[in-house]
Image 1 (cartoon, rainbow over the protein chains, first blue to last red):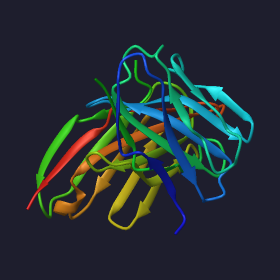
Image 2: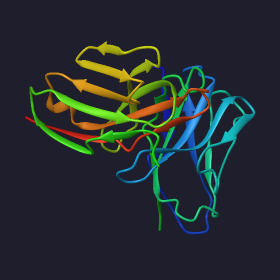
Image 3: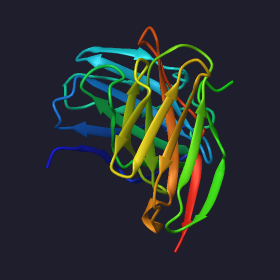
Length: 112
Length: 111
């Protein structure tokens, strides 16, 4: 089946720790995105990538980092510099920038 | 302020009724997209309507776009309990370099 997967589903982090969220797609999409969703809110763009080895900051990139070494993979690292990381993180991909986006199931991150 | 703002924030209807959600935006767009999100899940794309289109249909879904009023509506006809979800509009700027999600409408369909 073609699709986009995220792991883990739930993640707990102690303050001061970096954590990495995984996002993999087998849709052969060039563009990939990371969003953050807080309760009762819409999605806010953290980072996006239009092509391998290239990525751009979104609206709320501070405290986050990404890499795009392979077309299929776009991992997100939440660093200790992110002061309020507890949220639901969604990864998405599309054939081209801002075409119809396909979303993964999300990772819920909780800081203890 | 939000580029896309949905109205109402929450809607509760009886199964079989129609549900209408609205989205207003502020700046010129290339296209507008509607997504659905079940609780705790990822979003699912429903419909994309381009700035030169006025109406699109997909099954029980009907989307309209009025660029003069900078607004769009999503109509779900003959609603079902399974339609219970949050619905988001997302606008792509006319330059194509930014996509912005609204805060969503929470729809509850009572069996």
